[in-house]
Length: 562
Ligand SMILES: *Cc1c(COP(=O)(O)O)cnc(C)c1O
Ligand SMILES: [Zn+2]
Image (cartoon, rainbow, N blue to C red; front, side):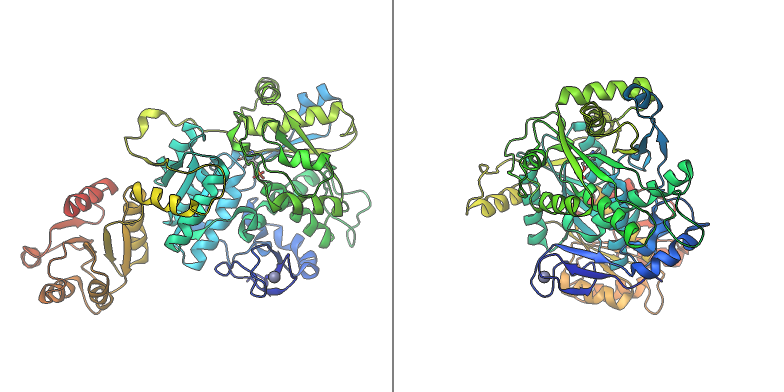
């Protein structure tokens, strides 16, 4: 299906076949690796492959790090519209300004791409629990896709993340851990928690699925611009580029993962011979947190971190871009050119009003930052009147009202030390984690031969409670599991091939080690009076599939574990 993907180490150059679950270079241990595909072959085949495919992110799946798209978790990601910013263009004297409207993704930000590809890759690899830190939108996007895929998600957010974004994250059943501290501290805490519990950690710009997902913005806009402007003039049917690249790609940035991925996308289009030039990158930060802009203007290739960001636009408050900036700068200078600019919170709010009134777009402040940057760059003559400009309209916030969620939907981690990385820091974090009780949970075994039912039950339990879950796919496995793991509760299916639920019950009951474990039977079977009699006294609860909602099961589980 997909071609072989090679992961090339950015440090030592070592090449190895790509696999999601081995995220470091086998030669030097570096986490910075880049995916490579067979561009010569794909350049020939891609335009043909695309015709007839729906206009969404998965149309480029040969250039994504998955074996095959998984339609069952899709929410219509990618394929967002591109339209001309007519009024903005008139006012700025440039009729070639286009808006890539990423608000129209399933959770209203361009992070939907990252979430869709990463969750699809995790599902393919059989991973069902993961951890990440976020300034808000990554948390929301991953929450939605994780919910569909039955993946348990732990999200570490700083207490500065707007309450509406936190509530939306919690609404999806994600485990929200609020960290009092900066975003960089939230990232460190998430990493430690993941390491401690052996869970998959989303590493953002160091993660191949994340970077690869962002390429689709470059692919889509190139196709869309071609639809609007026609193919490049020198192209013929037999040779030459077939798609239009803009002169500028503009985005507001925080950690800089978006542009790093989009840049790779254009680079691949060049390698495949599908476009004839590389766009310039115009990247915009907020003044109160602009480490990359400062470094760029000083010609430095390492950004000095901002320890305490001063901005109300928390989505953009990555104080320490680390190596992402260095790589971004190197690639921008290597491939084409670019310009980094900063705007004040106030300029962003003004652009936000302008966009709503003049273009009919209600965006979140972080997205408005890019527009404020374009206004500044056009006025300064950096963007020329005849140049084409694609602005990534990165997102919009969905208002989740306070009264929708009950109490206790987040866990507050407050006992973090100072800003410095001290030696005792790790212990402090661990102490804080155990204080909010996220280091030890009741243990539940789910026994069902149907993977979809196991996923459903897992999702129900994970979305609201804190449980360590085990799964068995048949009766014999269930008995082994019960002996080995001593769960506090077993959720048991009755109809399974070879050894059915009745036989499992009998075996558990006959063994003193497992006889006391409470059992909830969840069954699709219409029980005969004799069967009901057989269950009596052996199980605590009987639930008929199709006859209960998630909360009913949770209530039973909670009652039995009490
Ligand atoms: C994440 C985000 C950004 C910043 O993007 P990076 O590529 O991570 O720097 C900008 N705007 C919105 C709405 C975002 O969610
Ligand atoms: Zn290496």
